[in-house]
Image (cartoon, rainbow, N blue to C red; front, side, top):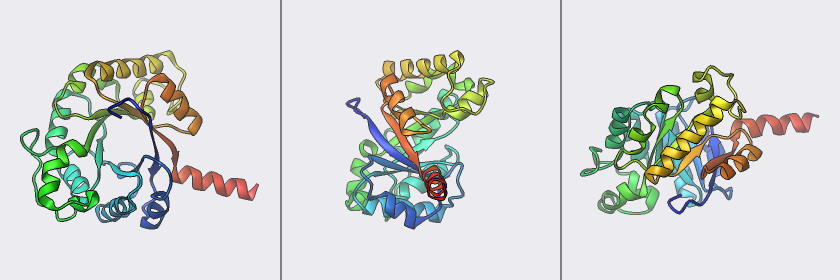
Length: 243
């Protein structure tokens, strides 16, 4: 992502270690365990992250229920290689999120997990040394309120990227819940997010409804895209078989 190269992933909403184990063998760059809008509890998230990390394939990421300290700590201490904090609308919120995700002197994350280092196959002291550089803290831009603070948010030291939640962004702009909206206001919002991210030297990601949408977003300038969601692929696969 730092080189601007595309990274493709899969969205995991099924609260299933077995499903995560299967997906961890796919040739994706990352898998995100969705704790915000999926019925995934802390223990299940921990086991899913460990299963993905142990496969030594896609990077295990977690989209948090909220960007609070407790949620950040649980995910990173479980061994997540990165966290996505939803509904961040101001610089202060972004600063608090980064502080929770990074060890001093960058942030205020506390140290003590016996499992976090296992995800990188290193001992605890080595994890403390590498974690700030090797774990990703991304804020999710998904509300029109954030559009007035994009430069301030992207300028937060220690922030590793921004990720667009297109459905909530569209809703906040008074549009329907369409992640692929062609409305000019929605397109302008995406352009503004990309501009602010580029100006700050940050990679930008976005949730995509399909591989076709992902390809379009890559052309638009995003570098982190999901090409599938486990729930959608499962449902559509069964429909196809029934048909």
